[in-house]
Length: 547
Image 1 (cartoon, helix red, strand yellow):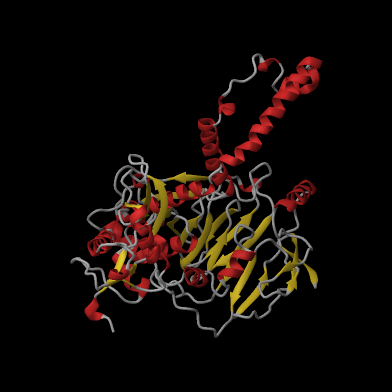
Image 2: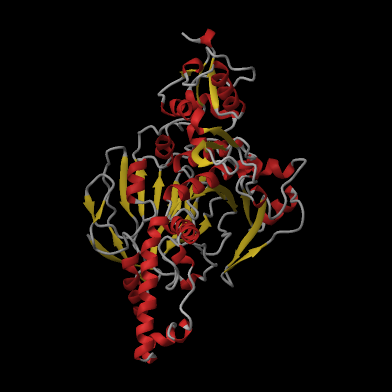
């Protein structure tokens, strides 16, 4: 049912809200449609772009989260948690990865979220539970940092900015050196937004959240906090090159989400955008007020701009992930490696190009100016090139590429700190004294290790390498100073001797007795476990404590 209302000299189409209880306390609401005051040119642009936007505004039925088909009025949803249903308790960093994601997107499930929204469409999860995020982060923590003995420096830990409505641009208000509380508070009182960068580096609740989410996604996660005075806007409209989760911690903020201007790479762009002028933006995807306890998911490529509500300041934490984690990134690594292997092993890939090839190859020659002989040479050149291209597939080592990505991730992610030990297994403690043959051992957290097999560069013998996050510095996570060094945590074991024992540790459903490991000598069994334990990779249960 649709009807027309006239408000503030504008005609606006209003659609009755669709309310329906889902299987897990979910109420699906279609978002209010955009205002119908655009020019015919704008409407034509939107029709042209619609095929690129999954779930874009229109009349095609969309599959709702509980399997019932309905027509949505925009490309973004508002999901409401049903009143009277208790929210889940945060499972912590050691539970199953899917459980933490289930908690993050509740009342959706992680499966529904990934199938329906991930990389496809924005969603606002409205919970009406201001305390959902607990004591994750707060403005009071930021104030404490600013008043401390080592206040954060501008551009490193804190940024000040405001949105100039006259020019439509972001204005940086950063100064030199360290930021003091009086200076930041004065700028904030005059409309400046505060961006707190990388709170996981100094605040344990955010550290634990990102530690768990990196485990859930298998990819780096970053965080920034934004504190904006009432009725103010800190940033210009823009889109990001990452998947964004906005957790509203304090206050409320109105967000407008749009498709980017024509000509931008969309959807799922490879790079973040410039700042856009408001009149450049295309289809409105979502217009919603995010309250404390709510979550807003913004896929990469979706333009977003937010204004804090007039009732008070707004504070949200942005968690981002999946930067440069696309098929094109795998192809880039795989094909460059394949060319190197092909050239090193096959003479044909190294042979010289035909003498005089520039006479008949190039865009000008493709326009039909080449004569009969040149056209024939051009055809042979293209045929030979495509033959080499087809043969290049034989030299692609996809496992090697994924190993490289895995090692990169292991070198940059948050370290699995002592606070994760009990949550990871529910029992077991880190020991500093020697491991005995009668002790039982298990991996502390397999997700913080990357095992791979390669040939030792000196002996040429097969070697098992275990890369791990134990050497990483959480105080440099996701910052420019945190580039991984060549001495990333890595253990090496001769494959012929230690491969069977390492396989037992990887495949066993529980703790394994050290003395049962398939190594010929007891001292080898103990030495292996002691080295793994010294690197922080094992949990040890002592024989006298076994039931």
